[in-house]
Image 1 (cartoon, rainbow, N blue to C red):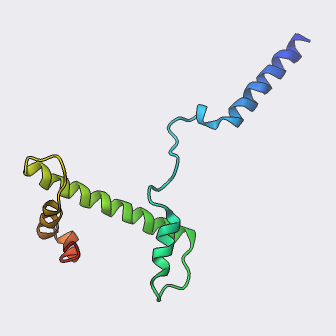
Image 2: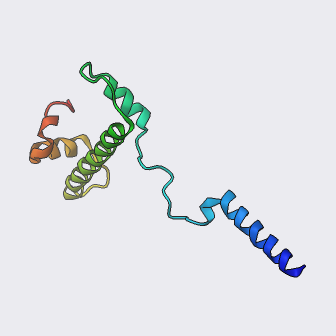
Image 3: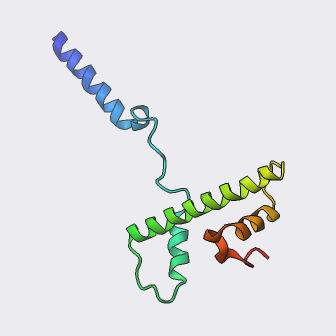
Length: 111
């Protein structure tokens, strides 16, 4: 009888863990991307040459956009630090575009 009760309690504990998976793995991210994939898909559909975009393609474009924004923000922040400021300003973005060939395609976009 006592063995059955302990087995029932163990089963109950397992059920509680299944209902609350966050208690098991606190490190699990809430989402795989920060940008909403639906909006990225809608932007992709604005291209008349695009017929279909599967989930993997939307995910990859979303992730690439996030990495680009991260790179551009970090490069711009370096300009901010060089200017002994704490807030990124438009002139920091312009200097980043002027100094980095990787983002040269943004020339004139920020005007």
